[in-house]
Length: 371
Image 1 (cartoon, rainbow, N blue to C red):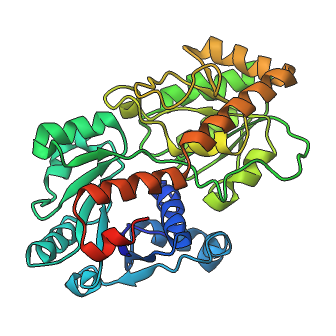
Image 2: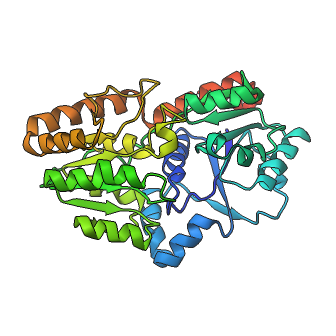
Image 3: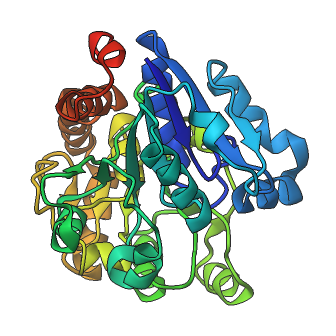
């Protein structure tokens, strides 16, 4: 089966967490023998920022970790019909421009024999619904939404029966415990500052508890303005800037624990959607404590796979307990790994994707090759 995936960028994960999951899914599809083409527009924002900050060396980790993936760049002003002419399945990620989304839909309506899906992995459907409504999806066969709360929004918009909840997951070929354990110390958080929508939560559930628990804290990420850097300095936090996602397992392996701090919209208006770092951290075998987050879909076993903190004081207590109790750490690690391996790998998500495609009466040749 020939699968074409339009992504914002596959090569760059600079402030682009969607790349983590897409890389893992496409790699699993390749491993199953499918012909996979990843397309990214020339001059895309994430790649441009990565190159500006780190030059071509910033791509080294991706190339080393994903030799089977060879994304192709295309001129976003060109007609994409030729890019999808021989595809069996086309998936369009919502980070792409409305004009491109519409053009591929028209190619489908004009007789394209491919199944066409829209992949939404963002909170804009509730935080900026007009931005999503600007997409012309009239030529699309269905929507892949990364949480049931988001699927419900699409059903309200008329997509009932044509929207599927397709959570992100960990690429367990990359994210797994280290083969040889080393000394671990301190707390780590890998995340971007973004637009400051969780500034208060980061201080309440990460900076202050780490300080009060006496745990050194290392932070990796981008888009930290001077005010944010000043806050980190005030707490004595080690800030290390951007790290390639392919390097995250090694970073986790050096630390004792990590923290999940969901963005505001995922903690309020779109419950049940964790950040992908939660999947990846548990897959790497590092204990995790989460700020308030409603696991409305039962993805994990709360207080077994990870610890829950209702407020900053409880976060501090959990961090102290993890630092002092190796048996507690071992139990959390074992439980989290069990859940990831049973339910939340990219391999599981590819199984789900192929099942969805089978329900859409994909072209006969594709259906025969789904297994």
